Length: 197
Image (cartoon, rainbow, N blue to C red; front, side, top):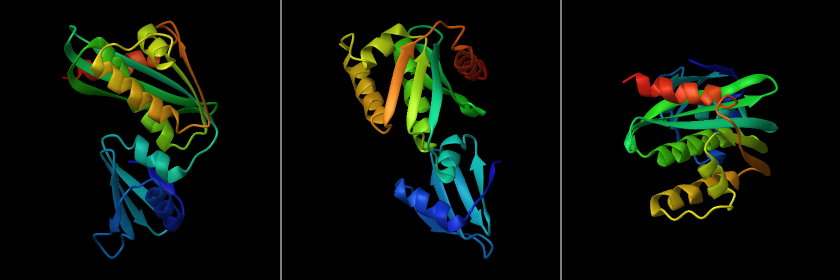
């Protein structure tokens, strides 16, 4: 359960600027509450406590941001289509800022890869990074997003549009295909999520 030492009024302003609804607290000690991406932030004097199974995106919004991050993504699929999961890691020079893995239901391997990229970019955007260097081991996804290959499947075309919308939130970005061993952390997170059924 992350605890963020901050001015609750400034944190509230950041959340509202990002379009997150902020409500009154439930007790005399709570200044306000906000829910975003499956987590809830509760503000007290001098701090905000974040609760939930995946607090990464909400923590990112509360802390503000700036700077550059390296973003890794991977999808896992058992069968094609089959049970699927996503994994991602957002890293700076200070270490891992956020990482996660989750099941996404039944999907194709390419859909799982796109969903992993979407989750990774949402987390990076919520952390307020100005610049992202994105890496994944799916050549298809990388080349489709960069516009080097056509996206003929309507479902994947929608995913590509969503990814491009997210990339437009950053001042600068790169997207490159890397070998699986460089993408090992995201790969492990996706497979661990799939194994935890």
